[in-house]
Image 1 (spheres, rainbow, N blue to C red):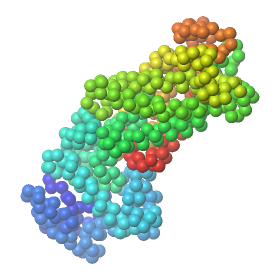
Image 2: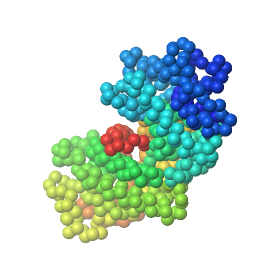
Image 3: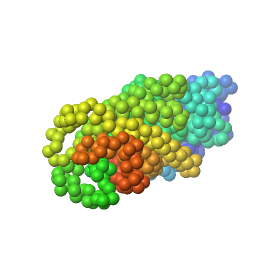
Image 4: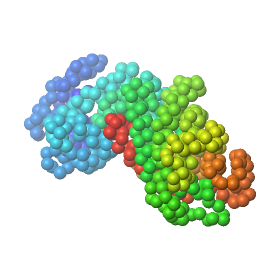
Length: 522
């Protein structure tokens, strides 16, 4: 089957295309309206009929291609003001069954808006579509390894492999099915253009990233397992932009939820059956002792440690992947758990003294320390270097259940959504992503919380006057004996209360910073 290089509009938009010409009434002319812009392409295909120059339309008097574009422009110009803005695109494309995110529509308008008036007039609209189709044709040809006018699953696998991402044949077929309109399990030029013409991605890495986000790869990462980046992302420097955006988002969310985090630490250390410390009472006690500003004690070091921890975790993750022996950029679930947990352990080991400082600063009384350095100096003088690694063992042990359950629950929820609800797009949208991330994080915290509580108590033992210095197992036995199993979950309520705002704030800030840093695709 000869693919129609000259036809600008995809089959998806067939209802708005001029019907005044047909192959029967005009022999030798492409029924898709192919103009003379690509006659040389047809001549290179064995058995193809050379196309004639675009003929005038019997109805509109212009070329058929021009008429088709005018009809499409009128459909998308919802308010009829002679220009297509983002709102017009949103409404018009939905009528045509094409769904794009607001960010994608902004990219389309920005790419074609030559006079910077925030909308596309007819000339700008035509120029954008023609320029975009040329780029898509180059991508199609580069993916068409067999040069037969079709893309199959093997060619998708090979193209992804060339970019440093290995996928299974089943995953490649899933990509095919999202674009294959006639059930042949191959994609011809029409189907390729249909899927991508009104999508702003116009180069192989960007289109691959669209697939990666929307179809088979993770749409979100756990809090322990680092993001994975393709060879192209590493080459272009996109990886560090993602890390910086993630760091900024983490700093914003931690700062906004710092009062709840400090309350959690206080309840982990001081709450018991005898004092019945609760959320309202805890906040009142903090404000009474140090004022409103005291609610943010320990937040500074908590934000500072994001950068070194993220950088070390990323570098360790890449090295561990090589040690595992996998030649894949994107690992399977089990390999990701091993590599991610190991990288998390290395990163935590490197910055663990900062974890101890965070706990001590959160528990400090007014005037006890003048700052982070003074706190570190006093701990070193009074307790020695070993104090900076108190609680290290339960902290390391807590990584495995948290990472494993968080990752497993997220993957289960994501795949369940894809199987049940994904139709024309495998992008679940913001609310589904936030719900999956919140649920998986909550499940991971439930499993690892007792270890986190024991870690915090071990870090804080020296601050408790007259309190015994117990080991990890000694603390477990003491808590269960004096408070019962529920004692291992002191402070869980404020911890859960901060999950939803943390996830929501970090997501919003992350998306904003991605745009600010020039990250075009997630």
